[in-house]
Structure formats: structure tokens, C-alpha cells
Image (cartoon, rainbow, N blue to C red):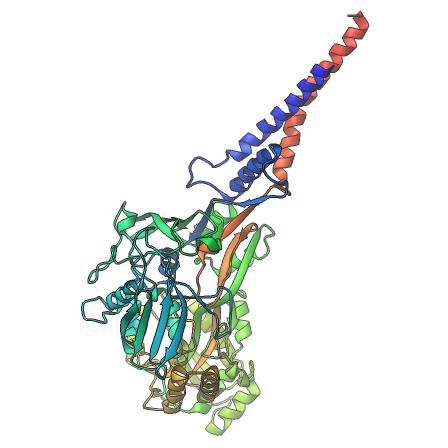
Length: 617
């Protein structure tokens, strides 16, 4: 009888293991094909085996070794901070490199979100013209070559061409963001101290230093006067970066289109003792379109979907109990702009009347399915000093609009004609839908008639430059998480609205300069508060909406912190693998398999024992 019990126990255990095998082997044909659900189950099985030997607690947890991120956006040009100027490329480069300072993930509307990175401390003096940074003394590029002040100087001399021997690419971020207008030179104060001498007092200098365009290059990999471009089959030669939480393990692209990018944990990362990166390997898959990306996250082929999902898909994911949707403030903004060289849009009351007719909430819900949010300032939500200045006009405030237009001779029989232009080639999201809603909002006033006009992006820019569009929809994506990036937009020369720092926008311009030159929070707040009020009063352009920074992922994905920087923070992502409770399908498979195998054996034993009693054997 004891032998029979041992036999039955052995069969049960064997059946359970057999039941697990088909599950844990699903889609594990290669490391590249490892999927989230399989990783959970394999982690569970491993933990069960460890528990059986007494090596871990029953409630112990571990992290998956791999997270797969899906997107429809690849690297725009290369992994060199001197040229790459896309959010997707910046996500990769901020994982392969580090800056002197960083932004605390997930924080919005605060001015003190800067945290130390390669610099441990800093001071500002000389009336805002001198910034000194003290560097970490234990950082290396490869475990041997030290990072020090000369590396900082090399990076900025190269990327900004501060000494005349570097790059300063016309299509690079340093040129478009005006680094050369701000930084005079960089000098070393010792092995681990560096000084930035500025041309102008620049209050958001730390924000500038925290963005990917200011991240360190590796002097060995990044020549002083030439770019580092994609090199097929050679990841070491394809990146100018160093000192990040990850190293570039693999990068495949065909015909200039990215396919996959693999990041592997950097064993020499300066903050590895802080627990970063959490996950050993990040695999970034670039899909052809949003439909394929949507399918990949639904089928469990990827753990995270980011950049590329359209509003209907995001709305559907919000109703899926097996998916988490994170949303933070995004950096994409849309405006209505007025060409003030064309009457009657040179009249502020006409512009104010149009602003009063708009229903931003309806626009965000109807066109974007609540994946965007109403915006009432040029300084977006999520950025310090934001103020809802345009809220003074209300929403669909037709009575106020009529009161402004009636003295100008406009009424139900003599309507104000507004020709609105929109971009038609997909440069901006849902442009036609936005234009239709704006048309409906304005015509509901009873005193405005709208004519819609469309042009592809190339033609649209020419029309902008020629100042020939009376009213037009325009978008902006900011790369610097600071008010300075957005506040000067109405009098930007490239927008060419006839409202600039020498005509119409003098007072606004002075407030903007006062904000960027201020040395205290109080001074910056005073300037930007007054500036936003004046922008609403002048109404040279009207903010409409601001995007959400959206991340879609499996329920066990953690470390997601969407914010105005538009960064995914790869080094924070992880999938937690817990022993209990584990996947219910594993439990069912175990018991079903055990029952299938054990039941006939049990019946056979019972029949044998019954026969033995009948025959007396």
C-alpha cells in the first residue's frame, strides 16, 4: 500500500510538470520572441522550483529579464546628439548616455524638478552668466576610461562648435534651440569641475542641460568634426553616446527604416547601485503602422506600446481590463493663428470673438476621444508657470462674441467671413476633423461664416511664409520642458504673423526676456504671469489643445511615468514576476493534467484491489 501511495504521488507530480511544459515553451523559440505572458509563467515555475528547495520565500518576486516595447516611430537620423532631433531618438540616446542633470520623472508644473546626474552639485553666479558644476569622481565609460571635466568640454565644443572645430549641424537640435546664442564657452576648473560661461542670463539653463541634446558623447566614438551614423551590423560604431544605463546591443534597419533596437544593461553605469536599469534588456520593435502595433499589444507580442496608437485604439484599450493605459501631459500643441496683416484680423476684438466661440472640450472629446486636453495658455499644462489665461473667454460664449462683433457691423445678415486653412497631408493629427469642429463652433454664433481651405505641408509652409492665410491651424511640439520654449511663439519670426518683437509684440517680448533672464522664481513667475495675461488680451493666436503622453502596457508592467518631457524612461521599466497569485491558466492546466493522468491509474488500482479480494489473492 505504501508503494501505491508513492506511485500515485509520483504520477501527480509528473502530470503537473507535463501540464506546465506546453505553456512555458509557448513562443520561446528565441530570446527575441519572448513574450510577456510566457515570461510570467516561466518566472513562476522557476520560483516554484526554488521554493521546493527552500531557497526563496513563497511570496518572493523577481523581474523579467526582457521588456519588449512597440512603436511606429524609429530613430529619425542617427544616435548622435549633434544631429538627432526626434523624441524617439532622444528616448534611445537618454538610455545610452547621461547628462549633467536630469528631470525627476512624472513631475508636472514645478520649477524645481531638476535632480543631479553626472554632476553632484552646481552654482550660478555672475548675474546668471556663470554656471559651475561639480562632477562625480567614480564614473567611467567602460570600467577603465574615466569621465571628467574634459569630457564635458569636449561634448559641448563638438556639438555646439564652440571653438570652431566642431559641428553645429543645421538640422541638429543645438542650432534650432539656439545653444550658440546662450553658451559662450566651456572651461575646466579641475579634473572634476567644469564652468559654463553664458552670453546672456538664461534662467532655464538647467532645463537646457537636462535635455538629450546636452547629453555626453564618448570622445573615443564621437570624432570632433564628424557625425556618428548608422553602421549596419556594428552597434559600437553606430552610437556616439556613453555613460548611460544601457549599451546598444543591436540595431537593424532596412532602407533607412528601423526594425529593431536592442538595449542591454550597462555594467559600468554610474547609478547601477541605485537599482537602475531595472530590466536587463529592452527590445524596441518598430511597426509599420498603428494597426499592426495595436494587434501586437493585443496578442501579447509586446509588453508596451508607445507612440503610434491613434485615439480610437487608445479609447478601446481604456475599456480592456487586461491593459493599463497611462496618460500624462504631452508636448504637442495646436493653435489658431491670425495673420494680422490681413483685415479684419488686425482688429483684436475680431480675434477675441473667434476665441470666445470655441469649445475646446468638445474638440478634444469629439476629434481626439479624450486623448488630448483643452489648453488655455501658450505655456502648456505640465510646465512651470502655466496659467489658464484664455479661460476669460469661456466656452462657446456666443453672447460675448456677438457683443464684440456687433459694433463692427457684423450680424446675422452681415456675417463675418473667416477663411480657415488646415494642413491636409497628415503633418498634424486629425487636421480636417479639427477644422470641421472649429467651423461648427464659429458658425453656431449666428454672426460668423467659415470657408475651409486645405494644403499639403510643403504648400502650407509656403503660404505661412508668404503671409497669405488669414486664419490657420498650426501646431508646435516643444523639446524643452520650460516656459521659455513656448512663451515667445506669437512673435516668432518664422511664424510670420505680423506680430513680432518690433511690431505689436514689444511688451510681450519684454516680458518674455524678463522671464528668461530672471534669477529668482518670484521674478520668473511675475513676468510669465503678466505675459500670459497679455497674450490672452492681444489674442494674436489662440491655443486649442494639448496632447496626452500615452503609454499602453500589460498589467504587470511597472515604472511608467509619462510627463511633459515625452520620455519613456526605459531604465525604470520592469515586469514583476510573482509566485502567488500566478496565472489562473497555469493552475487549471496543472489540475486538469493531473486528473487526466491520475484518474485511470487510480481506477486501475481500485479494480486490482477489488479483484484481489474476490479471488482471495
